[in-house]
Image 1 (cartoon, rainbow, N blue to C red):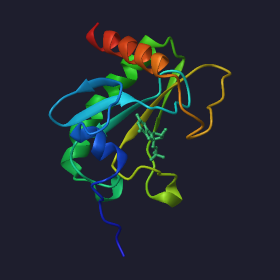
Image 2 (cartoon, protein in one colour):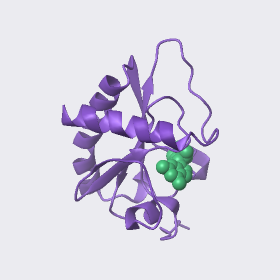
Image 3 (spheres, rainbow, N blue to C red):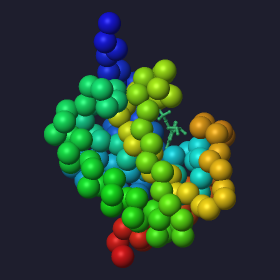
Image 4 (cartoon, rainbow, N blue to C red):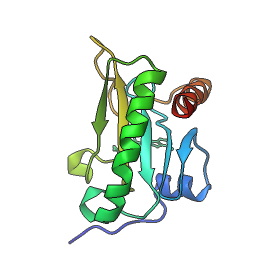
Length: 142
Ligand code: 5GP
């Protein structure tokens, strides 16, 4: 049976403003904020506002609007953090590695010779997240 979207997932709460985030960007279709358990310095999440669990049940029109934003954030993150590359990741259902069931994309700056930290490794210092969000906002504005 197909799994249903559940309104009480953590990203739905962030989208409703029920819980805070270190916001980097927002428009009518999407929001971007820092991942609280970054797998590398500058790990940011891009979250479409429309409700879907993941890629499998997403409206293709939403995917079309999000692609240019992923590019924009990837370019900004590479610049903001002096990264050597970017990994774009997206997981679908538990078997696919997904832990939060609202569609989202990971933009993860990569540094030569530096392996990724584990998924969900532990909470980053909020001051670091805040500073990194500011760096990304500045790179987006540049
Ligand atoms: P998934 O495994 O579903 O693709 O990734 C979910 C991501 O959300 C993980 O990288 C995790 O660190 C992040 N995350 C989980 N809870 C929160 C939260 O409350 N706030 C933020 N900003 N990120 C979260």
